[in-house]
Length: 245
Image 1: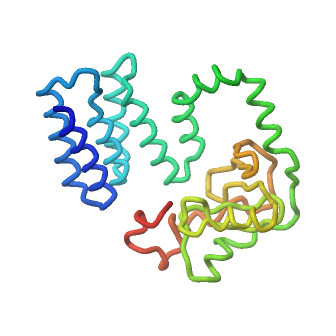
Image 2: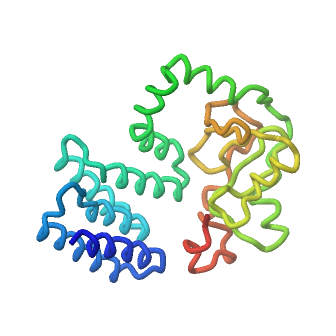
């Protein structure tokens, strides 16, 4: 009797990715009702967590946060599905460029395993951040412009922008269709970027795959605040959510 609820949840995920949010909500509701009716021993009901995933895809942040808060309050200790809700909210944070928020949401999920496996205490994390930022220099050259160099040249579009800490090249993030910031690192060997988004100052080392705080680079520190995300205006397709990575 557990097969049908699981199949409904899988079907709901397909609907969500196709943008059929109403059908997805119906499937998740039916899965939850079937799970309650059959008892399904030993298998957690994750339909509520999947609804957080649905709300994140809809872009309904207020509902997603409210649903996640309700789950946290109702399930103490946290159930296996709680990680799914946190991961969905982290993806929403990533889509909005809130990388530190995403890291903080995901840290409790992996933190216990990391600490048990590698002794990852505060001193080790500080040392890791130092290694990640080693070699960062404050360039006198300003950013290459307000948009991704390659996207502007080809007529493409981006989700978020990243600035090379070494040469000032501005490229699009890994969520963007073309991932030009990563391509710049691979082509030039410049591994460190800083977010070029308003309100963000974090750095990322592609080589070590670590985030860290770094020095203040030559201004400007971000693209114009009026510039839309995703951008630029006039080049972003209506169905852009289905083209991101």
